[in-house]
Amino acid sequence: MRIFLVEDDLQQAQQLIVALEGRGHVVDHAASGFEALGKVHGGPWDVMIFDRMLPEMDGLTVIEQMRQDGNHTPVLILSALGQVDDRVLGLRSGGDDYLSKPYAFEELLARIEILAARAKTDPQATSLKVADLVLSRLDQQVARGGAEIVLQPKEYKLLEYLMQNVGRVVTRTLLLQHVWNLNFDPQTNVVDVHVSRLRSKIDKGRQVPLLRTVRGKGYILEDPSAENDT
Image 1 (cartoon, one colour):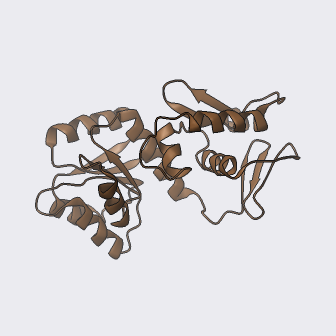
Image 2 (cartoon, one colour; image 1 turned 30 degrees about the vertical axis):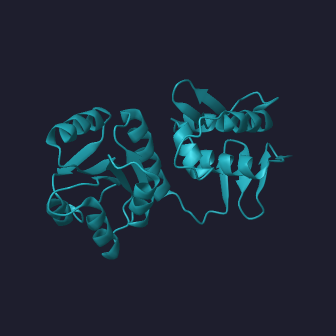
């Protein structure tokens, strides 16, 4: 991925650049709001990472200006301001996702990978397909191997999100945000319970399971046929 990082703390920026480049990504950096505004259209970028509090011009102002200029590159906002009102303001200013500091690098990596993948996915696609599992958005029907699978509304939404991010580890935090619309962890096992129910419906009795738990990280929906093609 090509990543544009806007972070005024040079030590934090360098650490993040090294970590991202270590995963094979290309990173360009700006250290102030004005510098970011001057570089922001110099992409194409797959995703942008914006610190919120910047010298000269704050990150939200730069993002708003960028959106007004017609730039729709996915943006992840990083900020030490982590209250609900802060996150809502960041999203309403044009951010696509919001991660509070301090954060785990693997969480940041998962979020930017998902943002970049989502930007390449046709949001108007009428169906999603992973191996022999098919989700129809027109009638909200799900089938595997031609056999219908009856899902509850939350199970359907959970599966849709996992299918949109096939091959990527999705954390509990991301699922809480995008399936349950929660910007905090209520410290319940609601995610685990729904994933377990979903797994039993789409994988039980099947020779090849698709939904897997990645211990300590989250969940992943895998497409065995895609792996065989590589």
